[in-house]
Image (cartoon, rainbow, N blue to C red):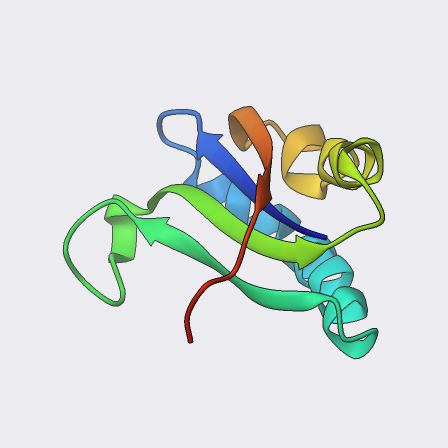
Length: 99
């Protein structure tokens, strides 16, 4: 089943986010290579493709896991959590309708 993982950044997270980004992307790339990643990306803090020093307010990942427990365990191991980027993370089942 698909799961939506939404991480909400702490204020002024940009430097911590940048430092942890390679490890974060490595995990996403593994999901992609396994065919389990639908999409992933950050929420810019301003209305711009590249928010520059304004940074980001969080991230969205939609990926396939066996169950909610597995999705939550994967989310809890995200390097952004260990680096103090995320203030909180929600994990919810997601049902793809379109496209």
